Length: 534
Ligand SMILES: Cc1cc2nc3c(=O)[nH]c(=O)nc-3n(C[C@H](O)[C@H](O)[C@H](O)COP(=O)(O)OP(=O)(O)OC[C@H]3O[C@@H](n4cnc5c(N)ncnc54)[C@H](O)[C@@H]3O)c2cc1C
Image (cartoon, rainbow, N blue to C red):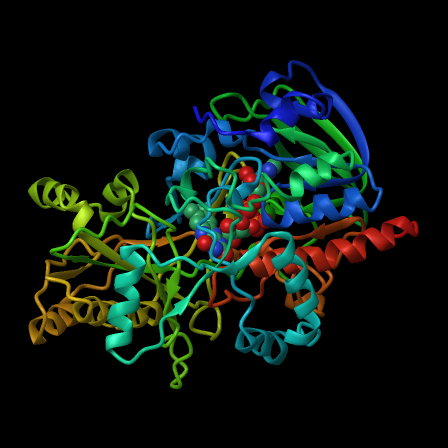
């Protein structure tokens, strides 16, 4: 347990105690009411909670994960993944082709993310305007919202030298004439530890746990942790609230106990798998079949290199350099953005997925490993349709996201680009993270091996930490689930405010886009509710 100050934990143990209900301790049915119920306490839910509570509205913030604060963050993977991630960090698409990381705790994915903070690219906004009719989202209109959230969350370019892992990406890219750039991060007084993915033990990361949620609590909000929103209460035209169940200490939903939450307005911000799932369970009107469709992942390919020097890819700020030279190819093919991920032993062992001696050798050499990721910009063409959120027999969400030929073509190009950068940085060998790949030395044999790799689901290791879409915004009911202001097209008293709003992926890490969108729509919602509307 960290001995450092934990002001958020202290406040929940002290002055906010009476306004925090932990579902794991709840033994009987309860009924509560408020102006607004917000489902999910991540990027979207956290921002909405602060703005709506500070506008004087009564707010119930409902989160299915536990409340964990900096005192609990001991930098141990084996404890962090089961406690803080959806499905203990083992979530996968239906055919198990993509592993998905998402948070499940107070603060949502912002509690465990890696702090990279980018504005939505102008090219993405132009595509939304031209193809999805979202003309109001111009860089100029969004600029004040970005500025507001950048100030609120202390977003600034990382100002100390990158760790060796990021430094090698910068060196290799620069030697090839590419333009590596410094990543802006949402941190204040960062200790440069590198354990952001396990919860920040120093409270430097400006996640929702230490920013907007405390502000909402200070303004009178009530937090319901370990409470899972089961279904919206509605009559086909208006939402009146929510039915929820507590979650026990092992993360299991306790359907024998029910919480009934009544509200003038429900904001759904359960993330881009959880939000479509809640709306599906609630059988909300879906006349055009858009609910859950077009869910995007920025599916990630990986390339693992070995260096003679120690890289220590687990130490230091995890992401501080990026390369976007391949993001917008002129031939219209799927582009990709390059970064490095933090590489801690447990997650590395799972993602590499190899066996026997080869696996043992990789793990023994982890300190000398260098892993680049290519995040593929999905959703920008008809041959990149994304996936669909569906429900299993228990009402739990599954994401069906088949990897198609267009994706695999991008994968081959991405492995090639990453290998070239790693060789240029001085790698002794490079290997695409694929079960049929072998370490390659520099030269033409490398290209030949890449060309031979079978492009099959399950053989290449594909992962994602960016889930987007499923309740897309559109000016027309036919084009999406929500209006551009986040309100549901068919049901009054309901809006969505999270990653599921996006009509495509972004081409950049999503958090700052989601903060800005949530700030904009919560500000509008607050004004409307205070005037008696929505
Ligand atoms: C390991 C990791 C690293 C990342 N790194 C970066 C990065 O560096 N930069 C970046 O921009 N983005 C990063 N991301 C992604 C970014 O954090 C997310 O895109 C963003 O937080 C999504 O916000 P959201 O509001 O849509 O959902 P989330 O932040 O995921 O919040 C959704 C919340 O809803 C809760 N929930 C779900 N269903 C229910 C229910 N039925 N009832 C109650 N609660 C429910 C969940 O438990 C969760 O807490 C990363 C993500 C991960 C997991």
